[in-house]
Image (cartoon, rainbow, N blue to C red):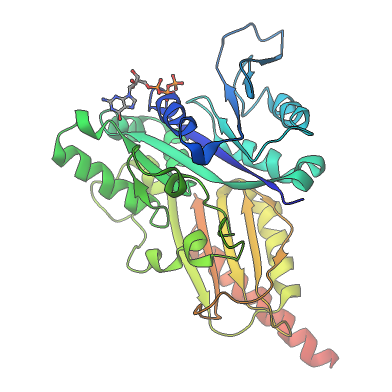
Length: 337
Ligand SMILES: Nc1nc2c(ncn2[C@@H]2O[C@H](COP(=O)(O)OP(=O)(O)OP(=O)(O)O)[C@@H](O)[C@H]2O)c(=O)[nH]1
Protein backbone atom coordinates (compact mmCIF):
# COMPACT_ATOMS: atom_id res chain seq x y z
CA UNK A 1 0.00 0.00 0.00
CA UNK A 2 1.49 3.31 -0.96
CA UNK A 3 1.25 6.14 1.53
CA UNK A 4 -1.57 8.62 1.10
CA UNK A 5 -0.37 12.16 0.36
CA UNK A 6 -1.38 14.82 2.85
CA UNK A 7 -1.34 18.42 1.71
CA UNK A 8 -1.47 21.20 4.27
CA UNK A 9 -3.33 24.26 3.01
CA UNK A 10 -2.52 27.35 4.97
CA UNK A 11 -2.60 31.12 4.63
CA UNK A 12 -3.63 34.01 6.76
CA UNK A 13 -7.21 34.77 7.81
CA UNK A 14 -9.41 35.34 4.80
CA UNK A 15 -6.65 34.64 2.30
CA UNK A 16 -8.98 32.42 0.29
CA UNK A 17 -8.25 28.91 1.53
CA UNK A 18 -11.85 27.71 1.53
CA UNK A 19 -12.50 29.29 -1.86
CA UNK A 20 -9.49 27.53 -3.36
CA UNK A 21 -10.36 24.25 -1.71
CA UNK A 22 -13.92 24.32 -2.99
CA UNK A 23 -12.68 24.87 -6.50
CA UNK A 24 -10.13 22.09 -6.23
CA UNK A 25 -12.68 19.63 -4.89
CA UNK A 26 -14.77 20.04 -8.01
CA UNK A 27 -11.80 18.90 -10.09
CA UNK A 28 -12.06 15.21 -11.06
CA UNK A 29 -8.34 14.90 -10.32
CA UNK A 30 -9.23 15.26 -6.65
CA UNK A 31 -11.76 12.45 -6.50
CA UNK A 32 -11.30 10.49 -3.29
CA UNK A 33 -9.94 13.45 -1.33
CA UNK A 34 -10.72 13.69 2.36
CA UNK A 35 -10.69 17.20 3.78
CA UNK A 36 -9.92 18.07 7.37
CA UNK A 37 -10.97 21.59 8.19
CA UNK A 38 -9.87 23.34 11.31
CA UNK A 39 -12.12 26.22 12.27
CA UNK A 40 -11.12 28.45 15.10
CA UNK A 41 -13.48 29.07 17.95
CA UNK A 42 -16.63 27.46 16.58
CA UNK A 43 -17.24 25.52 19.74
CA UNK A 44 -16.00 26.02 23.29
CA UNK A 45 -12.54 24.81 24.00
CA UNK A 46 -13.82 22.36 26.58
CA UNK A 47 -15.48 20.18 24.04
CA UNK A 48 -12.89 18.88 21.68
CA UNK A 49 -14.71 17.03 19.03
CA UNK A 50 -14.37 15.87 15.52
CA UNK A 51 -17.54 16.13 13.59
CA UNK A 52 -18.14 14.45 10.28
CA UNK A 53 -19.80 16.73 7.81
CA UNK A 54 -20.80 15.50 4.39
CA UNK A 55 -18.89 12.55 3.03
CA UNK A 56 -15.25 12.77 3.85
CA UNK A 57 -15.04 16.23 5.27
CA UNK A 58 -14.10 16.36 8.90
CA UNK A 59 -14.29 19.50 10.93
CA UNK A 60 -11.71 19.77 13.65
CA UNK A 61 -13.20 22.05 16.18
CA UNK A 62 -12.15 23.79 19.30
CA UNK A 63 -9.13 25.85 18.80
CA UNK A 64 -6.17 26.09 16.67
CA UNK A 65 -4.87 23.00 14.95
CA UNK A 66 -1.34 23.95 15.82
CA UNK A 67 -1.80 23.78 19.56
CA UNK A 68 -4.93 22.23 21.00
CA UNK A 69 -6.18 19.78 18.43
CA UNK A 70 -3.10 17.90 17.42
CA UNK A 71 -4.67 14.85 19.04
CA UNK A 72 -7.79 15.42 16.97
CA UNK A 73 -5.75 15.55 13.79
CA UNK A 74 -4.23 12.20 14.64
CA UNK A 75 -7.63 10.74 15.49
CA UNK A 76 -9.27 12.11 12.36
CA UNK A 77 -6.57 10.66 10.14
CA UNK A 78 -6.80 7.37 11.98
CA UNK A 79 -10.57 7.33 11.48
CA UNK A 80 -10.07 7.55 7.73
CA UNK A 81 -8.30 4.20 7.76
CA UNK A 82 -10.17 1.62 5.78
CA UNK A 83 -11.88 4.15 3.56
CA UNK A 84 -11.12 4.59 -0.10
CA UNK A 85 -9.09 7.74 0.30
CA UNK A 86 -6.52 8.81 -2.24
CA UNK A 87 -5.51 12.11 -0.78
CA UNK A 88 -6.01 14.27 2.31
CA UNK A 89 -6.07 18.05 2.45
CA UNK A 90 -5.80 19.70 5.86
CA UNK A 91 -7.03 23.29 5.86
CA UNK A 92 -5.54 25.08 8.84
CA UNK A 93 -6.90 28.11 10.62
CA UNK A 94 -5.41 31.32 9.36
CA UNK A 95 -3.55 31.78 12.61
CA UNK A 96 -1.84 28.44 12.57
CA UNK A 97 1.86 27.91 12.60
CA UNK A 98 2.12 25.04 10.13
CA UNK A 99 5.19 23.49 11.75
CA UNK A 100 3.48 21.51 14.54
CA UNK A 101 1.02 20.11 12.01
CA UNK A 102 3.83 18.95 9.78
CA UNK A 103 5.59 17.53 12.82
CA UNK A 104 2.49 15.60 13.86
CA UNK A 105 2.29 14.07 10.41
CA UNK A 106 5.93 13.12 10.48
CA UNK A 107 6.28 12.02 14.09
CA UNK A 108 3.21 9.92 14.81
CA UNK A 109 4.30 6.37 13.92
CA UNK A 110 0.80 5.20 13.02
CA UNK A 111 0.36 8.15 10.67
CA UNK A 112 3.86 7.94 9.26
CA UNK A 113 3.16 4.39 8.10
CA UNK A 114 -0.01 5.27 6.25
CA UNK A 115 0.39 8.89 5.25
CA UNK A 116 3.14 11.00 3.80
CA UNK A 117 3.42 14.73 3.85
CA UNK A 118 3.01 15.93 0.29
CA UNK A 119 3.70 19.55 1.06
CA UNK A 120 2.53 22.90 2.24
CA UNK A 121 0.45 25.19 0.05
CA UNK A 122 0.32 28.75 1.39
CA UNK A 123 -2.15 31.33 0.17
CA UNK A 124 -1.19 34.97 0.31
CA UNK A 125 -3.80 37.63 -0.24
CA UNK A 126 -2.63 40.23 -2.77
CA UNK A 127 -4.69 42.96 -1.11
CA UNK A 128 -3.84 42.43 2.54
CA UNK A 129 -0.71 40.30 2.17
CA UNK A 130 1.90 43.03 2.40
CA UNK A 131 0.49 44.47 5.64
CA UNK A 132 -0.07 41.01 7.09
CA UNK A 133 3.53 40.02 6.43
CA UNK A 134 4.68 43.23 8.12
CA UNK A 135 2.51 42.66 11.16
CA UNK A 136 2.41 38.91 11.68
CA UNK A 137 5.36 36.64 12.13
CA UNK A 138 3.12 33.61 11.62
CA UNK A 139 2.22 34.82 8.13
CA UNK A 140 5.90 35.16 7.26
CA UNK A 141 6.54 31.64 8.54
CA UNK A 142 3.62 30.27 6.54
CA UNK A 143 5.06 31.79 3.38
CA UNK A 144 8.62 30.79 4.19
CA UNK A 145 7.94 27.08 4.69
CA UNK A 146 5.61 26.69 1.69
CA UNK A 147 6.24 24.27 -1.14
CA UNK A 148 3.76 26.21 -3.27
CA UNK A 149 2.79 29.85 -2.86
CA UNK A 150 -0.57 30.97 -4.20
CA UNK A 151 -1.35 34.63 -4.66
CA UNK A 152 -5.10 35.20 -4.26
CA UNK A 153 -7.15 38.31 -4.96
CA UNK A 154 -4.69 39.61 -7.54
CA UNK A 155 -7.82 40.68 -9.43
CA UNK A 156 -8.54 43.17 -6.63
CA UNK A 157 -5.04 44.66 -6.29
CA UNK A 158 -3.08 47.16 -8.36
CA UNK A 159 -0.49 45.53 -10.65
CA UNK A 160 2.37 47.36 -8.89
CA UNK A 161 1.17 46.06 -5.52
CA UNK A 162 1.00 42.54 -6.91
CA UNK A 163 4.50 42.84 -8.35
CA UNK A 164 5.91 44.14 -5.06
CA UNK A 165 4.31 41.32 -3.10
CA UNK A 166 5.56 38.75 -5.59
CA UNK A 167 9.09 40.11 -5.28
CA UNK A 168 8.87 39.90 -1.51
CA UNK A 169 7.59 36.33 -1.58
CA UNK A 170 10.30 35.27 -4.00
CA UNK A 171 12.94 36.72 -1.71
CA UNK A 172 11.40 34.99 1.28
CA UNK A 173 11.00 31.64 -0.39
CA UNK A 174 12.86 31.28 -3.70
CA UNK A 175 12.21 27.54 -3.98
CA UNK A 176 8.41 27.61 -4.04
CA UNK A 177 6.65 28.20 -7.35
CA UNK A 178 4.40 31.26 -7.20
CA UNK A 179 0.98 30.41 -8.59
CA UNK A 180 -2.51 31.85 -8.88
CA UNK A 181 -5.62 30.19 -7.43
CA UNK A 182 -6.80 29.13 -10.90
CA UNK A 183 -3.67 27.03 -11.46
CA UNK A 184 -4.39 23.38 -12.30
CA UNK A 185 -4.76 20.99 -9.37
CA UNK A 186 -1.58 19.11 -10.33
CA UNK A 187 0.46 22.30 -10.10
CA UNK A 188 -0.96 23.15 -6.69
CA UNK A 189 -0.79 19.73 -5.12
CA UNK A 190 1.71 16.92 -5.60
CA UNK A 191 4.66 18.89 -4.25
CA UNK A 192 6.35 15.86 -2.69
CA UNK A 193 9.58 14.14 -3.55
CA UNK A 194 7.93 11.67 -5.91
CA UNK A 195 6.37 12.37 -9.24
CA UNK A 196 2.84 11.04 -8.75
CA UNK A 197 2.63 9.85 -12.36
CA UNK A 198 5.88 7.91 -12.57
CA UNK A 199 6.55 7.40 -8.83
CA UNK A 200 10.15 8.34 -9.53
CA UNK A 201 11.88 10.89 -7.38
CA UNK A 202 11.57 14.33 -8.85
CA UNK A 203 14.27 16.12 -6.93
CA UNK A 204 14.32 19.21 -9.07
CA UNK A 205 10.69 19.95 -8.42
CA UNK A 206 10.92 19.08 -4.75
CA UNK A 207 14.11 20.92 -3.90
CA UNK A 208 14.52 23.44 -6.69
CA UNK A 209 18.06 24.15 -5.51
CA UNK A 210 18.74 26.25 -8.60
CA UNK A 211 16.16 28.79 -7.47
CA UNK A 212 18.39 29.79 -4.56
CA UNK A 213 21.31 30.86 -6.72
CA UNK A 214 21.40 34.61 -6.82
CA UNK A 215 19.21 35.02 -3.75
CA UNK A 216 21.14 36.27 -0.82
CA UNK A 217 20.60 37.23 2.72
CA UNK A 218 18.24 40.18 2.98
CA UNK A 219 19.47 41.69 6.20
CA UNK A 220 21.13 44.55 4.39
CA UNK A 221 18.17 45.51 2.31
CA UNK A 222 16.92 48.87 3.46
CA UNK A 223 13.25 48.21 2.90
CA UNK A 224 12.88 44.71 4.23
CA UNK A 225 10.53 44.23 7.16
CA UNK A 226 11.92 43.11 10.49
CA UNK A 227 10.00 39.82 10.22
CA UNK A 228 11.44 38.99 6.81
CA UNK A 229 14.90 39.87 8.06
CA UNK A 230 14.64 37.21 10.76
CA UNK A 231 13.87 34.47 8.26
CA UNK A 232 16.14 33.55 5.40
CA UNK A 233 16.73 30.63 3.13
CA UNK A 234 19.64 29.31 1.13
CA UNK A 235 20.99 26.17 -0.45
CA UNK A 236 24.30 24.53 0.46
CA UNK A 237 25.98 22.40 -2.19
CA UNK A 238 28.76 19.88 -1.60
CA UNK A 239 30.83 18.45 -4.43
CA UNK A 240 32.36 15.62 -2.42
CA UNK A 241 30.27 12.82 -0.89
CA UNK A 242 29.49 13.49 2.76
CA UNK A 243 30.16 11.15 5.69
CA UNK A 244 26.80 10.06 7.10
CA UNK A 245 28.11 9.71 10.66
CA UNK A 246 29.36 13.31 10.75
CA UNK A 247 26.22 14.60 9.13
CA UNK A 248 23.90 12.69 11.48
CA UNK A 249 25.80 13.99 14.51
CA UNK A 250 25.59 17.51 13.22
CA UNK A 251 21.85 17.22 12.56
CA UNK A 252 21.45 15.92 16.09
CA UNK A 253 23.38 18.85 17.54
CA UNK A 254 21.51 21.39 15.43
CA UNK A 255 18.15 19.86 16.35
CA UNK A 256 18.90 19.78 20.05
CA UNK A 257 20.38 23.22 20.32
CA UNK A 258 18.62 25.29 17.65
CA UNK A 259 15.64 23.21 16.60
CA UNK A 260 13.17 26.09 16.80
CA UNK A 261 15.29 28.08 14.35
CA UNK A 262 15.32 25.47 11.63
CA UNK A 263 11.92 26.15 10.13
CA UNK A 264 12.55 23.71 7.37
CA UNK A 265 15.33 21.63 5.91
CA UNK A 266 15.16 19.56 2.74
CA UNK A 267 17.99 17.85 1.01
CA UNK A 268 19.34 15.23 -1.28
CA UNK A 269 22.66 13.76 -0.24
CA UNK A 270 25.49 11.94 -1.83
CA UNK A 271 27.05 9.89 0.97
CA UNK A 272 30.49 8.33 1.20
CA UNK A 273 30.41 4.66 0.23
CA UNK A 274 26.84 4.84 -1.05
CA UNK A 275 25.85 4.82 -4.71
CA UNK A 276 22.28 5.82 -4.11
CA UNK A 277 21.07 9.23 -3.01
CA UNK A 278 19.45 9.84 0.35
CA UNK A 279 16.67 12.37 0.89
CA UNK A 280 16.24 14.08 4.24
CA UNK A 281 13.76 16.62 5.44
CA UNK A 282 12.83 18.20 8.72
CA UNK A 283 10.63 20.79 10.32
CA UNK A 284 11.61 22.73 13.41
CA UNK A 285 13.82 20.31 15.21
CA UNK A 286 12.10 17.20 14.00
CA UNK A 287 13.60 15.13 11.24
CA UNK A 288 11.93 12.57 9.10
CA UNK A 289 13.92 9.34 8.90
CA UNK A 290 16.23 9.60 5.88
CA UNK A 291 14.91 7.94 2.73
CA UNK A 292 17.24 6.04 0.43
CA UNK A 293 16.18 6.60 -3.17
CA UNK A 294 16.49 3.85 -5.75
CA UNK A 295 18.82 5.83 -7.91
CA UNK A 296 19.83 9.32 -8.86
CA UNK A 297 17.17 10.91 -11.02
CA UNK A 298 18.07 11.04 -14.71
CA UNK A 299 20.12 14.03 -15.67
CA UNK A 300 20.46 15.12 -12.07
CA UNK A 301 23.88 16.10 -10.86
CA UNK A 302 25.18 14.03 -8.01
CA UNK A 303 26.17 16.73 -5.60
CA UNK A 304 24.62 16.96 -2.18
CA UNK A 305 22.20 19.84 -1.92
CA UNK A 306 20.61 21.07 1.29
CA UNK A 307 17.98 23.77 1.40
CA UNK A 308 17.53 25.58 4.71
CA UNK A 309 14.84 27.95 5.90
CA UNK A 310 16.10 29.50 9.12
CA UNK A 311 14.88 31.98 11.63
CA UNK A 312 17.31 33.95 13.79
CA UNK A 313 20.18 31.73 12.83
CA UNK A 314 23.07 32.67 10.60
CA UNK A 315 24.03 30.70 7.58
CA UNK A 316 27.66 30.65 8.77
CA UNK A 317 26.72 28.80 11.96
CA UNK A 318 25.00 26.06 9.97
CA UNK A 319 27.53 25.87 7.17
CA UNK A 320 30.64 25.95 9.35
CA UNK A 321 29.13 23.43 11.76
CA UNK A 322 28.30 21.04 8.96
CA UNK A 323 31.77 21.32 7.45
CA UNK A 324 33.42 20.86 10.83
CA UNK A 325 31.42 17.73 11.68
CA UNK A 326 32.02 16.24 8.23
CA UNK A 327 35.75 16.96 8.52
CA UNK A 328 36.06 15.45 11.96
CA UNK A 329 34.17 12.30 10.92
CA UNK A 330 36.57 11.88 8.00
CA UNK A 331 39.58 12.39 10.24
CA UNK A 332 38.33 9.88 12.79
CA UNK A 333 37.93 7.34 10.03
CA UNK A 334 41.47 7.97 8.78
CA UNK A 335 42.88 7.50 12.26
CA UNK A 336 40.85 4.32 12.78
CA UNK A 337 41.53 2.85 9.37
N1 LIG B 1 -11.92 38.76 -5.76
C1 LIG B 1 -11.44 37.67 -5.16
N2 LIG B 1 -11.99 37.27 -4.00
C2 LIG B 1 -11.49 36.16 -3.40
C3 LIG B 1 -10.41 35.43 -3.95
N3 LIG B 1 -10.13 34.40 -3.12
C4 LIG B 1 -11.00 34.51 -2.10
N4 LIG B 1 -11.82 35.58 -2.24
C5 LIG B 1 -12.86 36.03 -1.30
O1 LIG B 1 -12.24 36.30 -0.05
C6 LIG B 1 -13.11 35.97 1.02
C7 LIG B 1 -12.41 35.03 1.99
O2 LIG B 1 -12.19 33.79 1.33
P1 LIG B 1 -12.15 32.40 2.10
O3 LIG B 1 -11.94 31.37 1.07
O4 LIG B 1 -13.29 32.26 3.01
O5 LIG B 1 -10.84 32.63 2.96
P2 LIG B 1 -10.20 31.67 4.06
O6 LIG B 1 -8.74 31.80 3.92
O7 LIG B 1 -10.78 30.31 3.96
O8 LIG B 1 -10.71 32.39 5.36
P3 LIG B 1 -10.57 31.93 6.90
O9 LIG B 1 -11.03 30.49 6.96
O10 LIG B 1 -11.47 32.86 7.62
O11 LIG B 1 -9.15 32.11 7.30
C8 LIG B 1 -14.36 35.40 0.39
O12 LIG B 1 -15.31 36.39 0.32
C9 LIG B 1 -13.89 34.97 -1.00
O13 LIG B 1 -14.94 35.01 -1.93
C10 LIG B 1 -9.85 35.90 -5.20
O14 LIG B 1 -8.88 35.34 -5.75
N5 LIG B 1 -10.40 37.01 -5.75
